[in-house]
Image (cartoon, rainbow over the protein chains, first blue to last red):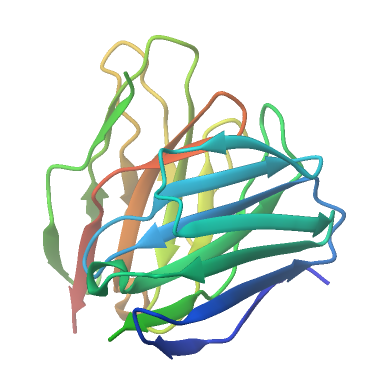
Length: 113
Length: 108
């Protein structure tokens, strides 16, 4: 299994809703990532988990809350989002460390109404 | 601070013509550079990494530390090469920073 799997593929939520994006990998990777990609823009790093511990938080607003229940799973909990948070959210994983290659999922398209 | 510059947002070439997508970087440490490609309706996928020095789908890229460049080249473009290409710099082991991307269109 060489894939990063993300669910749901599409999500529409209101500004008062609470929802979660889920990500799974079974490649034995020890680092997992959340990226945000707006239309016609490059992906921007949000969070990195290394060995199930949050190692990088790129000053993301607290309405985005990551969680790494185990080494194969990564969640992104969403609460009180704004319409400008609408974007493609990409999960990725890698072995971690120098020389590692980062593999991406297909992404979850989020629309906040 | 790190920076990755892809000067061309859009690039069009004819099928069979050579193609070069430019990438320049700025980083104080030892860079690890990648090219990622995003075909229409597909996930972002790795095309090349500089440390492996391999050729994938006919593409090559050489790291030039003197010019701080990592340009992507292919001698004969194919229609299936039409996609979005991102140059990316890996630093602090796990932080992958993307350039703004170049959309390549190969004209039949």
